[in-house]
Amino acid sequence: MKNKVLRGLLVILLGYLLLAAAYFFYLEAGGDPHPLTATFDGSVDARMKFDVERTQLSSVRNYASELELPTFTGGTLGAPSPSPRPLSDHKYEKVGSLNATTTQFGDDEKAARTAIKGFRGILQEEALNGVAGSRSLQLTIGVPPGEFDAAVAALQQIGKAQGYWVTKTDKTNDYLQLRAKSASLIKTRDALVALKTQGGKIEELVKLERDILDLEEKIQGLGVQLGVFDQVNELCTVRYGLSEVPATAPRPHPHWDRVFAALSWASGTYLSVLAAAAVGLLCLVLALVVAQKGKAILGATEGK
Image (cartoon, rainbow, N blue to C red; front, side, top):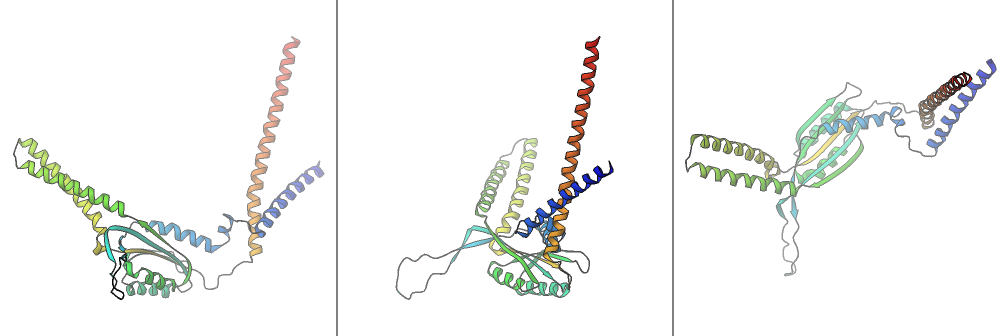
């Protein structure tokens, strides 16, 4: 009996090792370790943390006007070309996102703030988290459209760049809808104001005045939203994240990384398989016991 138990344990252990070895060779062949490497690679955790906190700093929306490039219609050779004209109705939102790490957090934070002033940026949101040795800084910066590329280039020189991407979204339709809605409300308000001058019952005039005040409030709210699109307030957005890393962070050998990842994955997977097998075996035993009991009861009934 003891030898059978020992053999059973050896079989289980061998199955676990084979499963871990199979996953290890899968990783060695270039397989995707997601999401296991997040627990062994601190930089992955830092990027995930940056993404979460960056999404929390997204309430500020900046818009700018597109430029209309001149079209050549013929003319005298050497004549000056017409300059681009701003299209006040053509609006867009441009957002650049940067992520960087640094071992000199204090110095690079000061450098980032100095760079922001250099390209006439407006610091709109910021979040500073963590303690010395694992701090992170997230900034949302509004920059003039003409300074966007210079701002990105300046911030890319600070710390060790980890990623950069730009998204540009056309917002012309949103702007035109807001403007049309505002114009419609203004016309309605003016009509009600004109109606009020004709007189009427006190109750009707009081209700009319309330309707006018309600329209005024909506018009003011739309005016605030339209003000963001105004050419005077034109800005593009740069979101910058700076994460502190240890100066001498030891990096484990990639093979050991994969060994630990394989053992971790095999542990969870194999335990799940064993648990499922145990439950299935228990259900089978219970089914056999119930069948045997039923057969015995049926036999006793027939004997009577």
